[in-house]
Image (cartoon, rainbow, N blue to C red):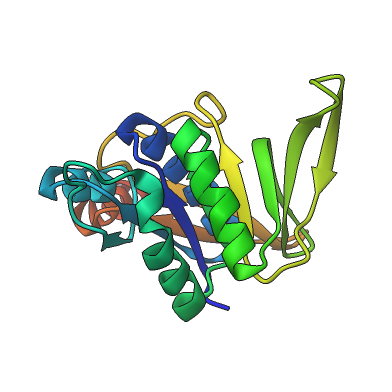
Length: 196
């Protein structure tokens, strides 16, 4: 299993929110973020600016193609790389994509996730059940967690943001992970060293 958190959404604004959630998970797990992008070169550049460390570009959707027509390609990528999680935008098309990927690959799909956390090194997802009457926390039993997430679950990071996360090694030590565009990270480290 690759130590990566992937995101896929045909909507750029939702992709930005998913990448922010992925960055949070990746920071705790010591993983990287990857966006699977369907669109033009500007969409690829946007994914990098929104925090993706790597991008798989599916190309541009043409005329009569539907988003779900890319499921075989996505399935092949997932089979080859086996990321820890794939967060899919909870749109009409995104739910179809997630369902087909789950059926094709035998993966558990958690729908309409509201929050993701890491407990004992495993990703857990909270989602509403019983028409919103209860909140359930689940952990996928498959190697790759497949989850749909809608808008408003995470706040998109500003373009070219630097992301800092802390993980406690023990009560006296913290592990700090800083990621983002190389120049921005260097600037942040320089500013911190001046303060210390």
